[in-house]
Image 1 (cartoon, one colour):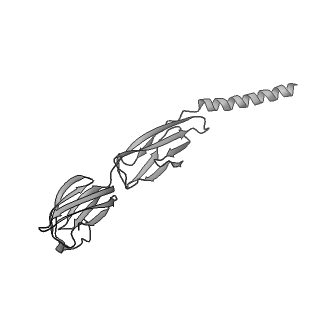
Image 2 (cartoon, rainbow, N blue to C red):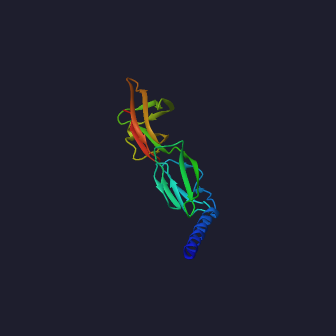
Image 3 (spheres, rainbow, N blue to C red):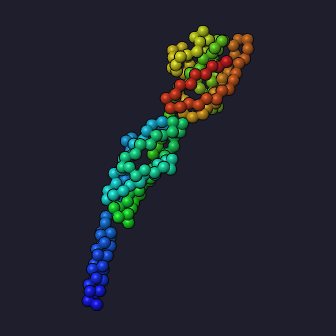
Length: 198
């Protein structure tokens, strides 16, 4: 009977010790930093864990994937912009009994590219240009220059356009005939789109 009592006291002592270790475990404080305050579409975002009292962390990225790494890279879609991407970080204590989390909205500026217009077989002066229904500066397109080899080339009309899918409308009078058209194009961050207005 005495041996059983000693065994019960030993088990009770070990159990109490483990419970007290868990109770005295510090509460994690979740936090992380980004390598920039704002990003452009197409950038790579670097997230770094700066939590305290945490043995494990879990990032939940804007696309829903998770990572337990202390530093995470996330490639931002080059076609999005002017949005806040949501990142969540959970900080978890060594025992797993305590946790904290933080959610941050990280602003993404729209990426931009260059749209360059040209005319392939007729002179086009004072061409009225609209992108997504918004009028932009009129263009003069000299057909003798031919097709440009790159955007922002001298002698051509170029416009900065945010990344995404767009609709271009152009119209002009050639002196004997009225010309117009609508063309769709997709602009990517840092991209170059060349469109023939004929």
